Image 1 (cartoon, rainbow, N blue to C red):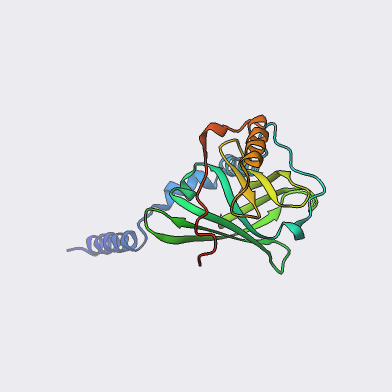
Image 2 (image 1 turned 90 degrees about the vertical axis):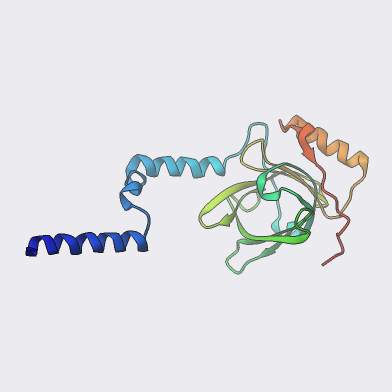
Length: 207
């Protein structure tokens, strides 16, 4: 066997070894390294932190009284809260000024608590209820407080579009009269209130 054949054989063996160690072909990622792709990704991230039509973040927002625990009264369905009841969100201040987010809920299918930790930051001024929250690396989604009771007892929160909406309360339950009022406000902002889910809060004092 010639040296050339041996050399080719070694190269082929080396190539197979690299493929087994790193099964992705880097050439597949070349389009993502181009300038148009970078622009596309940037636009995608902007879209995830946008504000839906008919939704306006509250002004004169104060972070300190907003911190603490909130109970989820209602939401629109989405995959990352699927099958969860007794959902709470707890907000605390990080040393860098961002907000630590702990979302917790009881998985009714797996019969266990599910918890996710994220980080929120203001998108604009810190006196406007327009934040972005991330549970996965650099990817953020809008968290828009567009209605807030003066005593910070109830908050209506929107995501980047009308597919994401929450009614949050400082207490596990609110009156039917209150709920009807908040649903009416949400309907006026363009949310499909007929599709709302009302998770139970019967484990509110359970750890």
